[in-house]
Length: 190
Ligand SMILES: CC(C)(COP(=O)(O)OP(=O)(O)OC[C@H]1O[C@@H](n2cnc3c(N)ncnc32)[C@H](O)[C@@H]1OP(=O)(O)O)[C@@H](O)C(=O)NCCC(=O)NCCS
Image 1 (cartoon, rainbow, N blue to C red):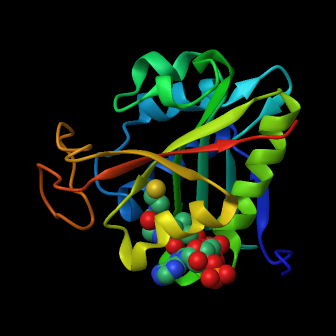
Image 2: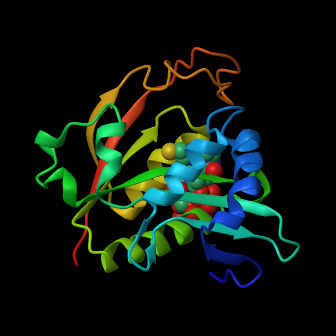
């Protein structure tokens, strides 16, 4: 599959305003604040390597955001983790924070492509495994399916995972969000 119609780059500070507008539209209003996105960008970079990616059209419109966090600081800021089942020390594990695409750009392989770019960057750091929280109620079970396709395996279900957040989930429409997260792990061969 070719992605030459897209401009795909590692996420940078210049992308933050557009990323916030994009996440308000496709993840839910107030899911991320500008400050949180800045923090996540800092956690996306280790040395010269960035593990988050953004996809734009040739007209510079954002159509995809793969937010990933390098091994390290994210662990103590994240709930719903079961490291005793991972088989890797948490300090060596990266995190797939969020992947969202504009609805007109789904099912074209772009989500998998952005995730594979991120995995290649993780391997450079290096990283032993990646954890994520799959959104169980995602339309068409797409979240779980794309993660399975990448080789992620289930660790544990976490009901009401996002219910503490004061944001308008695109499925539940208003707080508290009723959705379930499935903690999933991908071991990386470095
Ligand atoms: C989930 C998402 C990021 C996947 O990206 P995408 O570019 O649409 O997916 P891809 O084209 O790369 O497809 C990857 C695989 O995911 C699965 N998939 C994706 N969307 C699907 C859908 N609507 N229904 C069923 N399966 C789907 C398929 O197995 C697909 O592989 P296949 O086409 O070879 O069968 C995107 O659909 C999206 O933004 N969905 C809404 C938000 C979301 O669920 N985000 C994940 C939160 S953890």
